[in-house]
Image 1: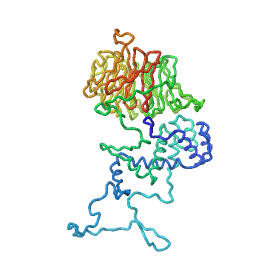
Image 2: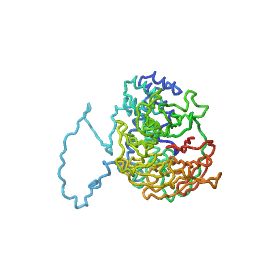
Image 3: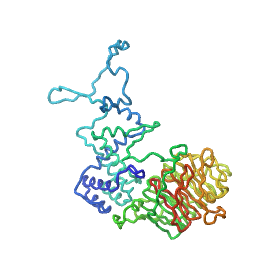
Image 4: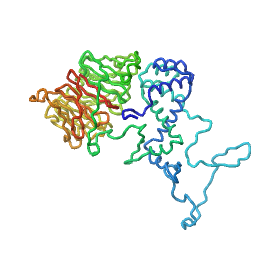
Length: 564
């Protein structure tokens, strides 16, 4: 599998499986509607393969549970070049598991066991023989098919179709099958299909040795390795202490995929967590939601009815400062100079207005969802921030000293990947770190960019590093614990080499695996690619006719959005 590809089954395959499964359940009309809407060829092959793959995927997923790692590892034993499975709860017993008449410690008789009747079954004639399986794993009843429960499969189909952007189809299935429609749009079905197919493969006797070699344990962590299936695991987060990563990777060759426009300047952009969508906001107060999958479809295979822009949203009265997808991917939030945060339900086919909002007394300049999705933090033009409970829309401003807050507007606010840390940067030139739960001020990086405003802020996945960009035309990589600058990235002012770099807005972003840093060059309106490990500039990408106001990298592949 390509490093950029998630462990999910191909969309077209999942759609075909859904159509066949619904036909198998007797919902031929629903199957036909999905085939027509998704431009999928309708075959006469009605089967329950989807339900079987879900069943297998859940079993495979269970066996891969990290909490069961040690047990699973102990199940693999090789003896006399033959393969056998052993599992006595955790590991084979080692005491008295074989007869040894030469062991004097075993000469004393053990207490007699108390046997009791567990179960009795009968044949029409006398029972003549019996045998146990070698292990204690459950055997499926011969009459029970290895398929997932129908109601479970229907619910998974509904969530998957919503995740693909087919909210109307999902709603129709929910109504027709009398299944409760939830807001949980996800790709769990596609993941289970992927796992089910791999589980099916792993049961093939001819592939036994290959499957054994897929299990590796390193540093007490469990991971599946298979170069043809699993994503690469190296360089998925920034680690400057890893000497093996000091050699610069080749510069990626970015090319323009798509360009969309607002009536006013584009000010912000954000990807959904799974990378399947991105949203943009504009000074003209509008938002757009774009399907990345539709962008990748070759023009000769694209459905003319499926445009990349799937939503245009209107509900702000002033320019949009930032957009953010809820972790579940179903809700888009935006904040604005109109002093509000708006929430848009993306499952509604025709919804263009927000369904909930938060109102403040100051312009809201930046926001960030907590990783679990229950909370939203936003910063405002008065230098303070609030943390809101999404369900109740009740919020609070941390009770800290007046001097702990920023003295000027907040430009960025970000939770780290576990929500325990909150960071902010401001026009006052400082970066401040806060406890993500209590809001207590932990550490400040004063004059982070020589007293100039700090425009953007990103926390590395392991929370060891902070990436910031300022109005001094520089980007800096910080050690979070020491507060020291590790590397400074600065584009050359080749046009006006003698001019000061002050008031030159710079923005930055890590790539999806943190192997590269992307910044804008404010002097040439281009994007520059850097190696974070040695500060080396790898490449520059031009073609932008206006100043860049935002750079956002895809969370799943080498790609980025530049707003101008």
